[in-house]
Length: 300
Image 1 (cartoon, rainbow, N blue to C red):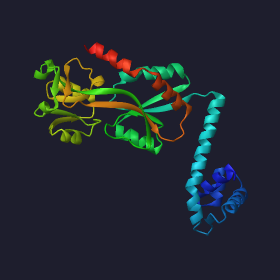
Image 2: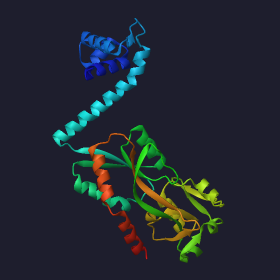
Image 3: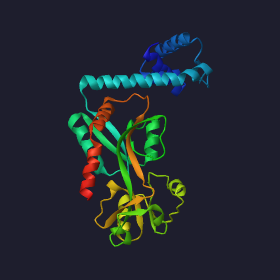
Image 4: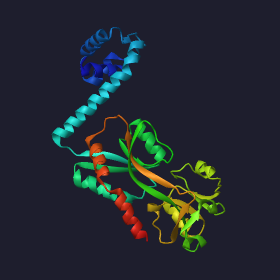
């Protein structure tokens, strides 16, 4: 079986017209027809039925089509990688990053990619954890950085980067602002400013701990939540590295504590580009725990 036969067959599946499929492939109709007949001989039966106004795939044709699509996709991918390697062309890497991750935590990683892989052009796509996971599984992304506490898919491969504590955020005039910690249940009567893109399944988390937080304001933007906290409108529940407003104070939540683990995520078993492999190597080489220690020292 030749790759040209596969291309001709798949073009024919799209057009269901031998003349149009031949034009699409840039060959004579007789060449395409001969290739389809050879393909039918290899598969042991007709792949299409030619009727004057209703050319259509046979059951055999419908069955083999998705497999040949995979062959074509992987062949094209291999050819692109071979050309990139031969020509040393720049490679574009689309990186999905969860919109609630503070950029400062990832700058060593981004800088490392630029320093060690100068031919990689990095584009960052910000979105929610749920959206990034869907894009990964659909093949729209090769790699993403996000976290979904209490949820991991068996289809995905996770490389942990760092852990981040979730904090209560209040205005500097709030009674809690001078406290080193607050018990989870003590926040129940406070006005809650809800992050619409919160990583936690809040209703389940609160319910497990017998607490009801009533949200009074909502926003998908962390800067809005921080501004409302600073204005004394209520309290926020935010990851510690995203809290960068001079008008707020952070208070550790205890009994229980809440942490999120941020991961680099790829699809398990899927071929990925050399740029993804290089990105993962650099991510593993960064001493993330030392960064956390340094941040703790600054906070004090």
